[in-house]
Amino acid sequence: MSLAFDPAELDPEDIGEKQTTLEMDHEAAVEHVREVAEATGFGVPVEFSPSELLNEKVDADRDPYYVLGACNPDMADRALDETLKQGALFPCNFVVWQEEPGVQRVYHVSIMKLARLAGIAPDNDAWKGIVEDTGELVETFFERV
Image 1 (tube, rainbow, N blue to C red):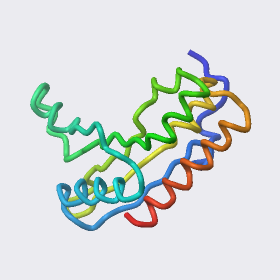
Image 2: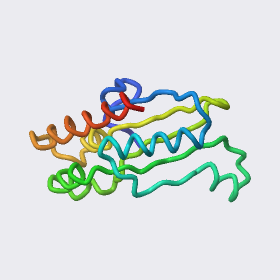
Image 3: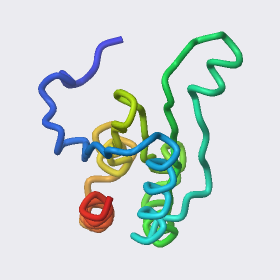
Image 4: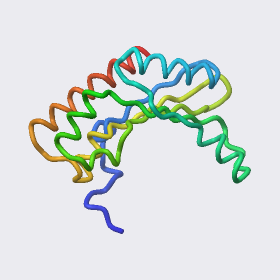
């Protein structure tokens, strides 16, 4: 399958990539990310540990890895007003993985920017507003985390 663009040429800003590290144990980092997400205006309706699942199901021996599926209802509603296809990318995720004991990576990409790159979302002023508004929420999240 050929892509319409070279992903290696994308700037992290093109996909809304944000990340930081936290110096704490994994469980504390997950709880901290959850609390900051909620304080920033994101609910966390979905969360799971792929590492626990894979370690159990296929004896993967993975280090701690956790996904918090976050949602800001106002942003989700606006996005669905523009394209029902956006739901295929819901929720937006904050991922926490252990880089080494006591050091956790927190990672996020913008589902709104990814939707535009993939052609799921329209190229219009309403979508640009959604991208800007969700970007501000994510910026606030990373400032606080």
